[in-house]
Image (cartoon, rainbow, N blue to C red; front, side, top):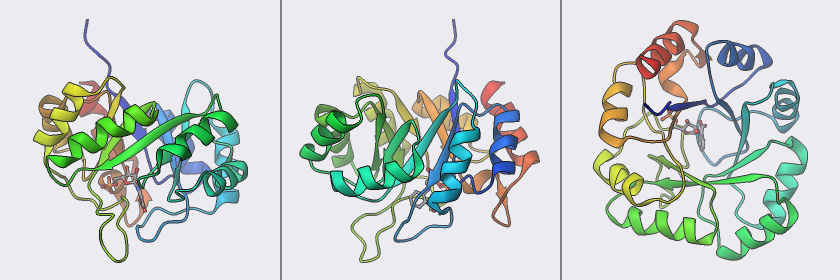
Length: 219
Ligand SMILES: O=C(O)c1ccccc1N[C@@H]1O[C@H](COP(=O)(O)O)[C@@H](O)[C@H]1O
């Protein structure tokens, strides 16, 4: 039996884009909240409207740059997604408080893969309680933080090491597109894939690019 690689289509910016992604086979949609940088931000009110229209069993990921439990819970109360994607590192206490407040909401920790130390960072996030990991190509150490949406790939050997050691599902993100996604699956063997700029033209979700991407993933 072969594993079916899940696909999350991120940076959804309208109900039309949501419907297109669902029609073309997305397993999850991503809604980007306020960020210090990046092209995919959508207003919380629109994100909430999209969440309400997404059919089961699809997942809705709310991307938040907040790092305190109070900030994340306030953001979640405006969007009500079933999954929270933490795009920056958060303290262990934040996980404890989120679990208590939102026991049914899944927590996905983004790890920005920079070097081999990212493996330990990923395993620490799992120990803190992450339900899944998402490996991206940002740089939180910059003065203006890059927390995703870069269109860049990172070192997939490090990502593969994380996949091999992680007890929870791992999504691969960062610069994926129809031409490199097959190699990404073969080299990293992630549970799922996460895409933004690689299936867009002039900022809009491009049906032909997403179709080509899905064809590469599903074979
Ligand atoms: O897209 C953004 O603006 C963004 C900003 C801050 C954090 C995350 C963001 N998007 C996420 O980044 C990944 C990778 O994007 P890309 O495919 O490299 O363009 C994307 O899937 C979103 O999850």
